[in-house]
Length: 183
Figure (tube, rainbow, N blue to C red):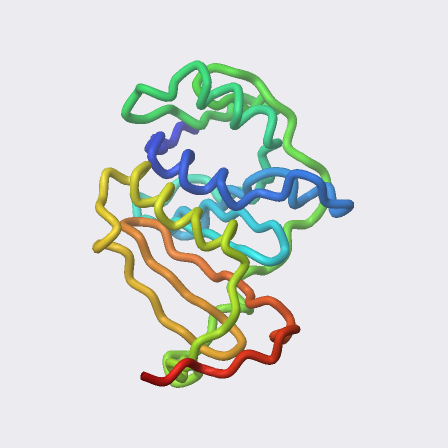
């Protein structure tokens, strides 16, 4: 089994992986294939990014690749266009670099996606560090900042940048009790 994955997608997704989380399965990216739908997902708990694409159906799988493997591949092949995810027997490789999938069940992230009606357009407070990732994703995808689509709600911020869509959870309440500015 072999699947081509764009380096731009990997660069974008890795921005949303957990780095210091007690939930070890979030310290990587989840790769899934089912019925010809391929999906890569990463979440740090407060952020989520996902890329989905269609290809000819192949074997089904659901693995979580360690952050260290992704970092190594991006360092070695960062200037390439794409790399190959492959499985030969029980051995998984990404760009011919072998890895062991992380044990554990990755959360079903599709449950957190809001309905279109739920996006009320009201602003929410976002961590600036999380919001800054959007520009980095646009750059990795070869897009400009004006190519970032954004939808707001008081309890979620949803974005789409090229092949990447994601969610940023807002900060819990405005500690300074700021109201919306009027002019």
